[in-house]
Length: 492
Image (cartoon, rainbow, N blue to C red; front, side):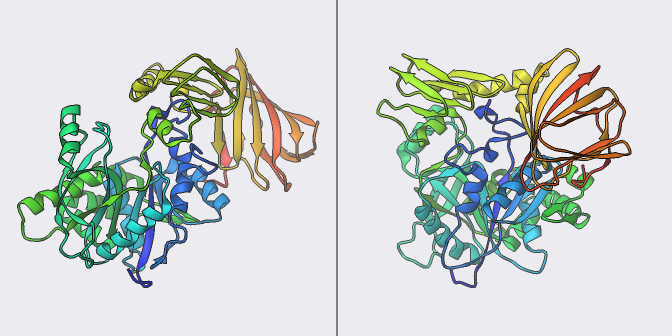
């Protein structure tokens, strides 16, 4: 890899992380959470390429569902790493997401090497990771599609596997660990996983890829021309709004759903076994030993976090007495565990999970049950993030609801009206600029106002410090969909 190689980090931020409920929710999934240190998983993924040598590094591109756009933009802003955010109006799996990224990376005639990284994985050895990225970039620049395989240490049934074949002849270094991809296989049963482990030729599928943008687009044109056509149509009809790149909703909704593995990688492996006309690029796998985890469930998080002498992991307000191999997390209330082994205990404001560590894959079934019964805990937190700040539903009862609302400096809520509720606002901290009908009010700490039902209103923070208010809603219906917006700077 030379300094002239343009490396484009692409972070794929899809998925809802239901097996990490109640911390991860559909509307605020695991990649947005700080599960290991101060950074969220997405922020840690973006930082993973900091200081990488031997190339020119482009600003990070994130591909995500438009529901997460403001939170992701804010997390990038807090890092001081602005980048482009390509918005998917609907989830269509990783192959269309990467195709949009390749189109975006090629828009000015460039053809960078894409470094494709899932937003919700953990890698603890950054030096080892950057070393294999440098190796992969050399091969990707020569038109190979490169992936990284994790050396397995157990017969894991929760991962896909890659069978490493013969040495990749095009690798310049004789001692290069790069191998041709012989097979891409889906999650096996236990007996098959044990056979893979015993063979020594199988690696876990990390979901990390490298290829030039043009190589990916050509491979999609050969393997899934229907997906490529739909993505090109959605891209051509799209628009740019600041850091957000929007594709056409109707065209993208018509796009078939498929993964990178199914759409291209399995076909590349099959082509090696029975070569066709040479239309597909070479598929290469490089072993990666860098403390990787996809944090797919609570037991996986327990494995990668620091433990005490009894094998326990605790975060937040937690007390443990005579406990072993236990994960206990608290977001607020005191969690006390006595005499328990191999448990997962997770406390949030509106839910508590207690599970045996061997059964954490089944947490998804709880989420499915919550959604079937229409319970909000299956998809959203009590604390909800908005582009202007956040609110926390502190209390609720028949015909009333109490919220704590924090508005960022300079931020403005939409000009809106409610048909079924009135609102009382009490300023706790900061200064509030309030539009109420034809009036404009400036409220300081300990001052309040009343918004009658049906009155047009808006809340703004004109100050330099966060504005915090307590909102008391009262009325016959208090749902979030009782909002008529007249003006909104966030385009909702």
